[in-house]
Image (cartoon, rainbow, N blue to C red; front, side, top):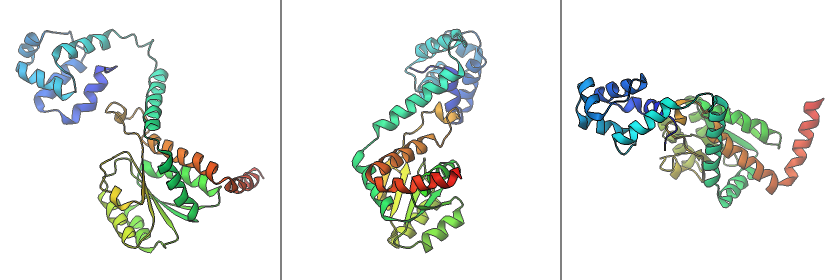
Length: 263
């Protein structure tokens, strides 16, 4: 059951027809709940259009929509603070991330990282922000990590990386054509490639030596109340945690880096 019918409607807005926009605007204006007959007459739309609107936002029928609408209208905002809402979203995201965890896959991921000194981190937009955190952590373990976020540099690195280096691709949606082209080049040159994505049907997957799946956003979360790099960061932190467990000798690099940073 959806907690907030208004957020639910907004999450589908870009998919609405003109008629569905009219129906959504009525509810988003928080007007008086009406029966389906009265609403159809008031908005000059058919009852079938209202029913299709309910289906469009993943509800069973108009009765369910009205129930959730009244519930959202009566909800005391003081009882559901912004902090509570965000915390609940983070908890749900962490739970979904945990459900995708496969230790064998993570171990294989870590083995590739361990074998390579130089890591090229491919990630655009918010994916590159997650890469900065990865760079900081693994640089302290003796790795040289390059963050590459623009299309031309990504393609250049795919063409000039060496076989003893590694490419780590971060693409939450996993449907970037330019990234796909770069991975095809790197694969052809036999450069090892790791991929982190939430798209289990991503066209990038066949070109990666190993793939880890991040949690995907619900439609409500995709509106922006959760920072988009969080699912990627969870996977990268999981990799880091497992890496230092498997390769404890690398902690010596961390201790030395801690000494340097504290001076």
